Amino acid sequence: MRTREIEITTGGRRGVFDLTAQVTAFLAETAGGGDGLLHVFVPHATAGVLVMELGSGSDDDLVDALDRLLPRDARWRHAHGSRGHGADHVLPLLAPPGLSVPVLGGRPALGTWQAIALLDPNADNPRRRVRLSFLPG
Amino acid sequence: MRTREIEITTGGRRGVFDLTAQVTAFLAETAGGGDGLLHVFVPHATAGVLVMELGSGSDDDLVDALDRLLPRDARWRHAHGSRGHGADHVLPLLAPPGLSVPVLGGRPALGTWQAIALLDPNADNPRRRVRLSFLPG
Amino acid sequence: MRTREIEITTGGRRGVFDLTAQVTAFLAETAGGGDGLLHVFVPHATAGVLVMELGSGSDDDLVDALDRLLPRDARWRHAHGSRGHGADHVLPLLAPPGLSVPVLGGRPALGTWQAIALLDPNADNPRRRVRLSFLPG
Image (cartoon, rainbow over all chains, first blue to last red; front, side, top):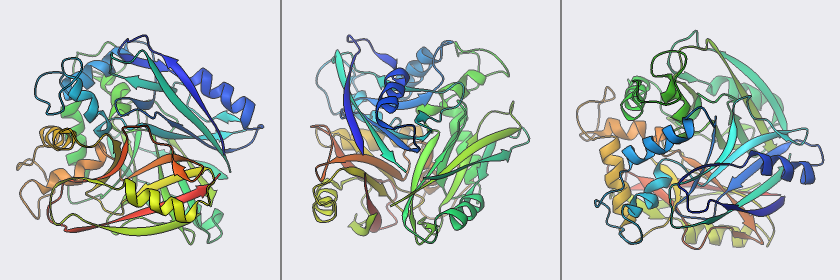
């Protein structure tokens, strides 16, 4: 397994951050043009990873849906940090911190419209780490 | 890694489509009776994959729950195609496009009641592709 | 692939059950201090696995959020067992039964606050099985 941790600067903005270019570069360096499985993992309790189409408003649609499903209000027992931060600790019920994507010929076998993205609903962290791993098949 | 793309004809019906027979056949041909990890991935931005019990009404229950959590109305910024299609672009918040299942002796190590299924909430596509991959362990 | 099934006694309590110690012990015995991918899978149709921060009330917050998103009432077509049990059959829409975590030097590469947990919303089963698998990389 080839593995590397990268750092994403969110600047404390809540939202969806495209990782596809970094993933593609990682595979170009490590996969040797081969097949296998890519794994993406965020070692943070309040962030997730997604494969989705970015742009055309879907990024903001997704954050709106998240905030409606897990409202940032005073209901949460886990109460510290910014108002509603307890919602972030329940994020893994919806968006897990890891995902896998098949790799063919050293490239992620994504569909035309798919991107690999970090979902960070938490404005308290300006930087996030993401671990990329390639298992040759 | 042995990998193959199959095509599923949904006929433009929204719902849950059982993939277990195709997955089992794929493993019978490629896994050589061995152990490893099966990966299932849909290269589409508006479809997901699930492991769940099918039948007894759960398929329709799941689509109803999805439509309640991500309503097919005019709220979505991403607005094209059928009414409410913006909801489909947010599907990855709930149901991701990929999943892994352990393989033992060339067979998926599912529980008695578990099936592997495609979730397609999008009536605009009569056909979907699904990539099946087996990583020998 | 090294793989083992463990049994978790929930005692019929609904909630979140920490698996991290068992996972770490499994990897200590099987991973030989190496790198690879850990896969965790529950062969049950009405349970899921999560990576999340446990404690500080988040466990109960998560079960409350689940019960609000998939209410345990009479709406479900799949109707048997305890009241609202149909909701459990839709759980895979939110929390899938499988997840992967990178393994470095024989240990799960979790973040400081992350734990691996079984989510069991179903009080009808006092015991659950969980399959742990390690794919050397």
